[in-house]
Length: 226
Image 1 (cartoon, rainbow, N blue to C red):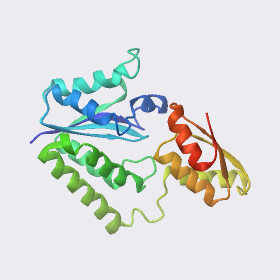
Image 2: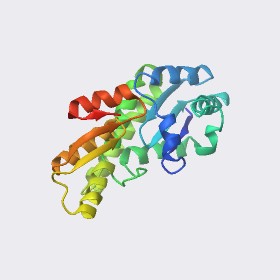
Image 3: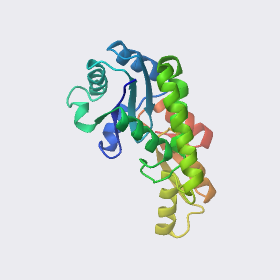
Image 4: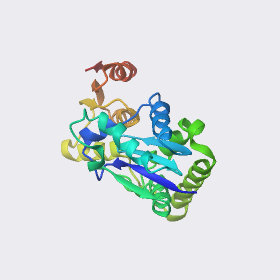
């Protein structure tokens, strides 16, 4: 068994690039199918606001290049996606996934959302993952849970939205009664809205690259979409 991870994260790519690489749930099967057709026995695509990573089982040499070609197309052909990314193989690839699942590779050390995102990626990719990646992702989720329970890493760990709200509270002293604009319309945006609401802040505007998604979130919050 040979495992390779090809991708980008918050350390290697700026936000505007990561946004272009991000995949919605409906996009994942087609992108995986395209990469697997280049030569790999299985694949899982993990895509969040901070990372887009393809985990491949027994890939041919052409499979990682297929990932970079696919992601480069999302940049409009002006830049090569590989300029922003990394490729890790075998032991390093497995170690990387374990660190990701445990929150050790997150922007906010120990944040807990990533474990759910790893689980969701595995679920969305189950039809294309294959036995080896099924076992790997199962073990990664167990490792992540064990790290949190045995080390106390998650004690006091914040998500990016909750950390941002905490900083805002220090700047403005009192947040209650204020209005807020949320940029983005994914899981982190929804969590940000929850964190803001707990401080008495009303979200009045939701802006997103995809208007339809912004509108869906805005309607839930009784806000206006941009």
